[in-house]
Amino acid sequence: MSPGGHLATTAIACAVAAVHQQWALAAGIAAGGFLIDVDHAVDYVAFDGKRDLRPGAFLRYYTEGHMHRAVLVLHSWELFALLAALAWTSGAAWLIGYVAGGLMHLALDLVYNGRLTPHSIVMFYSFTYRAAHRFQAARLLGVSPPRPMPEGFWAAFFGLTDAESPMLDSPTGHASARRRG
Picture 1 (tube, rainbow, N blue to C red):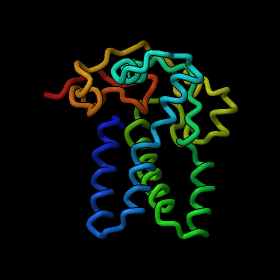
Picture 2: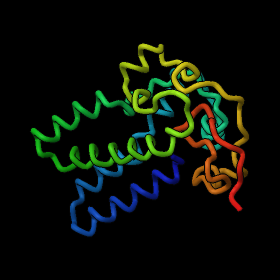
Picture 3: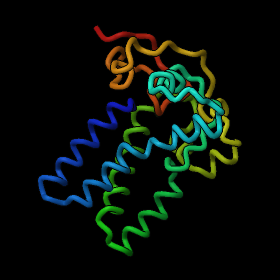
Picture 4: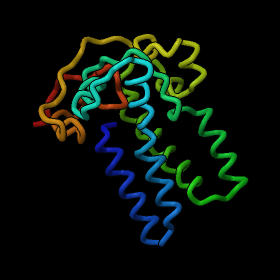
């Protein structure tokens, strides 16, 4: 799913929590639903060695399918199992919100990114599975030629130019070139 899609769905979920004055829950949802993608930035810098920190360069790197490593620590079933157990036992509203927001994020990734890879998208979200494949994006997600980013940063951020354009969470860029009519 596009980063803008995650931002919009997270904002709606946070608004529902805020209407009920559940501020800790809303903060957790925001972190789990949108800020979870900070691990893409960590991979970009720490594992792929990129130093161009401009948002457009970062987004282009992912949308055009240049990612080499897919460590993505925060996008893992194992982490969510641990956090769900902690949320259950602690009852901490912010942690419950983080788990809810993060699971919403992963569910949207499964739906939108699953059609972009020839391999199991469900398995991709297992940290152990990614580690077994040495975090190599091409082995995990398949290989495709780089695809041009939709024109303009905001169009790419919100996925406005192509109904199936590759987005931030679909690093190899498997999508048709079909444009919306």
